[in-house]
Amino acid sequence: MPKERSVTSTIFTIVVFILLEIASLLLLSHNNQLQKLWFMRISHGFSAKVWGVTQKVNDYFSLKQQNEKLALENGRLTSEVRSLRMALNEADSTFMPELKENGFMYVPATIVKSNRKSQHNYLILDKGSADGIRQNSGVITSNGVIGIVDAVSQHYCYAISFENTEVNVSARLGNEGAVGPLSWDGMTSDGAVLKEIPLQYKFNPGDTVYTSGYSSIFPSDIPIGVTGSSRIINGATNEIKVKMFQDHQAVRYVTIVRNTKLEEIEELEKEEMAKDKEAKR
Amino acid sequence: MKGNFWITYVILVIAQMILYIYCRFTPYIILSLLPVMILCLPTSIGSFAAQLIAFGTGLVVDYFAEGVIGLNAAALLPVAFIRRPLISLMFGSEPFERQEGISIRKYGFARVSLAMLIVIILFLIIYILLDCAGTRPAWFIFLALACSTAASYVMSLLIVNQLTYDDRR
Image (cartoon, rainbow over all chains, first blue to last red; front, side, top):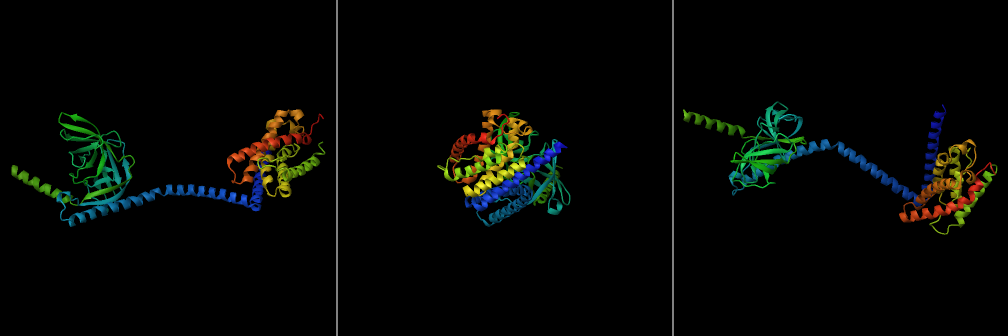
């Protein structure tokens, strides 16, 4: 009981102190212009600090929405840039046909599920056949290759991640260098290996590796990463370590690229293969 | 002496007003007896009453001498607030049990001086900060605090024996 009384008495003393101190400061600020201005300056500074912190917290919690907006905007702009470039190329009579890049459709998407625990990783994306996605579409970001669409439902698609030992992407060393298959190194989230580079092609550590555009899944010239150390395999080719720009652990927003002329290319390949078979008979 | 405490207290409040009005030779020195007067209030007076006395005394001095209403009251309230915990810390529970003052003869010069310095510094920090209202540089505040503490401490030494009650006298 005396302890309770002591606590109550302490609280009462503190409350009285705070009230009297506030009364004194109010008297001081009401009766003196200098002190009034000083208190106002302090209170404004404090309000500004509190407002700033609140704003930062709000900004932080709206980051997800902002990211989604930016991803959509980025996808739209990429698509627009590609179509404008195509229109420009077609209008330019001096344009060299082999540089023409066309036939890719860009759809922004979000990774809704990601399995990164094995050597055969996959991703589920929130775009499906209703959005124009087909099997064998590529999944990219502005920093590199993420995976290849393997199966499509109406609103989702299943993509084999680049972090999969079975996936190879055709990649090129520098702007005009040798082309070889690039695959995940199986260990780190930003490590890859570029294989089958003939020994006569010279390169330096730090050279950029791009998509070659030969696979008909990915457009050409997407920067993937930079070269690191290398070793000679069987005395015939170089195997080069590549540090990718895109850390696969951090990716959430991607762009699905679909080659709209893939069917036509595949049809042509089939016809040629059929002709070869007939010729062999 | 105990019966005459309030007479002495009122006389010292008037003395404080005279000091504020006539003994302001430099802005670096503030002569204040008020914090030690609050420290030396009879130990039978609780924190609530001590705070009311401090608030009232501060306002009276502000009104009649300073012209800056609320300045002494705001600076004196924290002294009243920490008075009981400070006495307990420095002198134990004896002053409260025997209801006696914190006399130099009984508790020693060093301990009483330290308690006086703590309340004077606390009072002067708040007083100078509020008085300057952000218009003076830090070096001025530190210099004024040092000079005022020294001057107020010497002045307070002269009055502390008048305010404290000692059975052995």
